Image 1 (cartoon, rainbow, N blue to C red):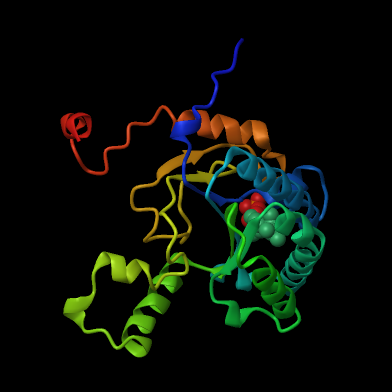
Image 2 (cartoon, rainbow, N blue to C red):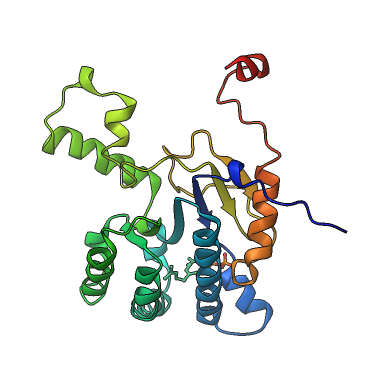
Length: 244
Ligand code: FPP
């Protein structure tokens, strides 16, 4: 059966992904959970490469939530070690491919030994223009919103009447970026788990049963083909969208 081709002009500008199911992937194979996270890194590599090739502007990956700090210490340590390893091994390729890497979330919570690598990859890639890769670390949507409110009040001294959606967006971790057009969640759970709450107001949701370590470019293409069949109305009627 001939696969339907992707329409280049209808690709999302921003894709956000909740990478779920690493633990289950490992469990199914009677392996320690960390093996699932390790395999998950391979999926990250493949999806980043594919998004860059497709010309996606922004890719946001949910790597570690504020709630994940409550996981067993050993798993947190292993995830942080994987993050450092990922930065070390991928920085050159990401930079050569003109990808800007930003780590979003409350970075003040990250262990001290992770911060130099996090700062380095953000600094080295800061001026790249091919794609932005946001890695959400110690991130939650509510925390992003709270930090934005604090910034508005404490740093910018804004009064209530001055606060518009645009101004508010400019204080979020994703300031200056388009909102996600497509939110993908792997491993079948039907929830948004405190991810980019403000930014996903009009995102199209795509949920697949595929576990994150098994997610590859074919699965991404499937999500994108599905996305391209959606009729996005942003609260308007079909008629209004036609006559625009
Ligand atoms: C969810 O699976 C996944 C995570 C909490 C971590 C995701 C991290 C990676 C893919 C590796 C690190 C990524 C980067 C970009 C360095 P889960 O453990 O909740 O799985 P489960 O729901 O099956 O238990």
